[in-house]
Length: 228
Image (tube, rainbow, N blue to C red; front, side, top):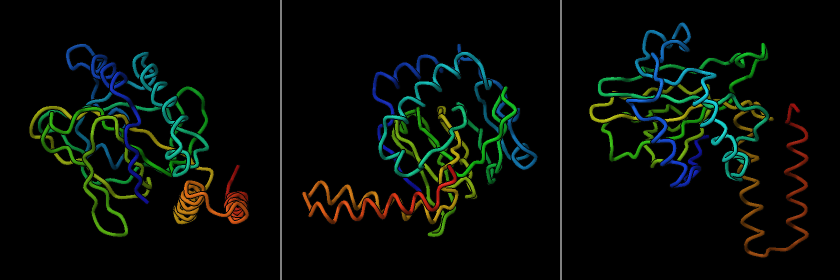
């Protein structure tokens, strides 16, 4: 399931991010420092060092926005979120086809997180760079994603995906992983669809008893499938 989450960040937040992530002042490093054995051979980009003050500051803004976004909560059913990271693709940079690692070590804690979902939050305006599309292979073929600044795409971390070479400008984004309360993507999709149907019925002032019954089904399924 691919879910487009529009306007996660507002205009003032985006302006702050762009100022802080300026190419001349931000502490960009070689992105291969966090690549696994598969990714290191196909990854060519820059990123902020994990745990750097700037990465923590901007990451906390992203986490706060996620907590307030009902679409993200409904689609991801988040249990744990890996600290958001930030990358930059200049002209000629790309990331070849790969699958994200299934387990990530949370920096400085010794704890591990299972990566059920991957997220990419676009920070640069799509008009400011050419190329840099995120290509995700799913059940219905390859999906091409290049969103407005502030928009986010959520997709299964098990998906084969890549970033096309940038041919002009710079592609700047935030990325991270989510361990969901519901591990199985098919089950998450059914819960997401059911939650959306319940909200639509509520908006149309549908029969209260039916809404209550469907809401009970939703929570009983979540109770059955969740690992919390």
